[in-house]
Length: 339
Image 1 (cartoon, rainbow, N blue to C red):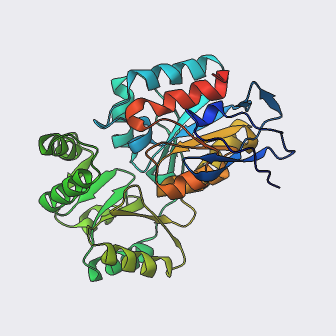
Image 2: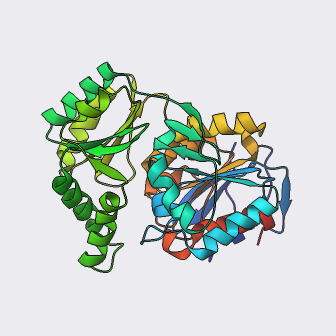
């Protein structure tokens, strides 16, 4: 059931919207930037125009969400996470990164959090111990890899022991081109510095042949594919989805993230919440891109970044600041304190 509230010309913040009435299922439609947005608040409490959700678990994406343009956690975000924990609210990271790459920015600010890694294919506890994994079979991998190669789409593999590429230079150039196209970076030097860090910091390891890694019996969690050619990406994605046992999403405009159909951020968030004894109507998710859609829909409260894709904003409860403006911190404080 939906109810349209009185139109207003402009809103300084979606958080400051005062609705006319509270519906039994806490659904709202508000007009922001000319678009009506469904605000799916979960709680029974409503105070001063802010949604006060009784949130106990917050899952936040990393790249484009928790991290700034330098791929680091801003001080404001780190402080907000610590504040949430002091209030008894658990903050978890939900990322397409593998564990090795995900812990780097957390260590820089001295934070240890539960981790939903590789788009939900792996869940790690605070101490890094594996709680669960959803892997791709070798036969499923073969079929997916054949499609990507047939369409001329470069890809990397994510395993339980790290991420690998067969072509470092191609991987570096493709990632740099994609990052440059976002307009998020001030210079090409900045782009190359961030792109090269993936290899220098060990986030991606070079191997002559993926089979050399897979033949060691490691668990295969994800394929990360890149192409600037939209038609190639779309055709590959269409063929991959027809395999039936694969989930295809994206964390950027020019990539594809390929996991087992049961490995999504949304399903992983539900598993974490269940393990903690937290009902889904007391969970929140914050994200910016297509691989966040499943958890934004699954969570009681879905929050989109200002820099999020339109499709992400469309399914979210409200919109917080951009990742370059510590939007995660803004969202955390609003959910906990309502101001």
